[in-house]
Amino acid sequence: MQAGLAMAAASCSRGRKRPNILFVMTDDHAVGHVGCYGNSLVRTPNMDRLAGEGVRFANSFVTNSLCAPGRATVLTGAYSHVHGILGNSEAKDAVERMNPAIATYPQLLQKAGYRTGIAGKWHLSHDPVGFDSWCVLPGQGLYFDPEFIDNGTRRKIPGYATDVTTDLALEFLKQKSDKPFCLVYQHKAPHRPFKPAPRHAKLYERVELPYPATFDDDYATRKVAREAEDMRFDVSLEGDYPELPKNLPAAEKKRWIYQRFVKDYYGAIAGVDENLGRVLGYLDEQKLTGDTLIIYTSDNGFFVGDHGWYDKRFMYEPSLRVPLIVRVPGAKARQVVNQMAMNIDIAPTILDYAGVEIPASMQGRSLRPVLEGGAPDDWRKSIYYSYYENSWVLAGKGKDAMADPSFQYFTPHRIGPHRGVRTASHKLIHYYAEGDYWELFDLEKDPNELRNLYGEPDQAAVTAELKGELQRLRRHYGDIA
Ligand SMILES: [Ca+2]
Picture 1 (cartoon, rainbow, N blue to C red):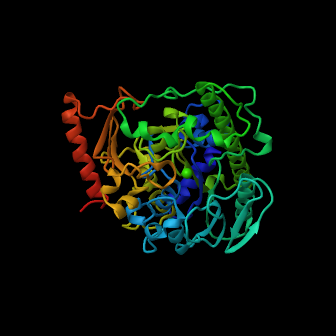
Picture 2 (cartoon, rainbow, N blue to C red):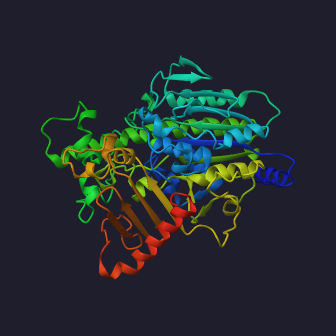
Picture 3 (cartoon, rainbow, N blue to C red):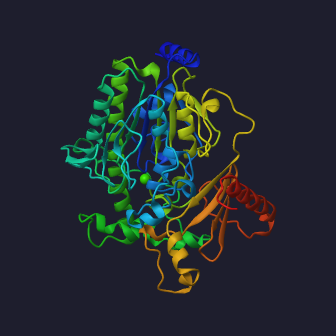
């Protein structure tokens, strides 16, 4: 197959043939829970195959760890403050309408003569645009017998969402056309509450899964984390499991919930991977493998018991990082890249390979030079993160809201807005609505981010440097005047 891939690349580089694009995205798939990222228990042979034949990014990050903002960022190559999707709730359209003036990569590919389609999860409040055909789940969608919006018409499709999404993707691929295709293939899974297909429901029945190193985090030195009770297994998830045995001691209850939670998560991931295998098999059969650029990622990271939590939102590593695997026709196989990639880079990368001009509104950078073995000297050495949920609550009520002891953020998990900068060695986070609260982590000495060093006298120089870098990045991305 490698010879075929190499020939395809040669023809692309001569401009004779544009590659097909297959963009695959899951929901809440954390980087530590993919086989090729070092997890031997989760079943992802097809994702691992892509990494074995392509490039795996060891350091890939999101701009805002939440579903709808992440999706809009992938489409536009821009930060939330540019595309307009700050948070998840459809109820707050006034602050969450995607800026229609910002181009998305499917719109640009469609204009450039690609046949474009999307199957599966969309999760934005407007209908898909830029697609010749679309069939998407409304909102989060259901795991079983889901309703889809099929080019504007609602219809229920019997079956398991991951299988149905793949059936729809294959239908699109099977349509005859002279045009290259761009298929956006986006799974609802493994979003919680995780529901594996019945065939995967008992995969881990007889196994006790290992606990993350930070499972019993005491949150010492981290005020906001300590207060984030909604994120904790032992506080918030009991109601999801009516079969949870009664009267378990607290530590046992937490472990019981964790086991069940992760087994269901892995079951849902097994379904995604198996279905990805169906699509890869189809491309092989049709001899399209050498003509198709494939990208696999997740809309955001996830705490899978890390810090005793589930969900995402915080700028901590399990939530900030995402898997990113790219199989480029003709590129050297089995590469692991350490350069920092971000979800703003996906749209420019796709356009670059398609030979379409990257608009100025896209704030990321094509990964093509990195994918093809180069490491440009001016590649980013730091990333900027900004989480916005609840910022509009504060904007409406002002700082006085925080002084009211009954005040609560209203969106799920009640995490306040924060922003930060991450370099190869450090992370600085500013919770600007939480009494100007800061956190500083030395990622080399403390990769689990357990010890907040902010304010310690020997950290003054690195803190000043990172504050300067944070301001520089905010200006660079137009998030500050
Ligand atoms: Ca998500």
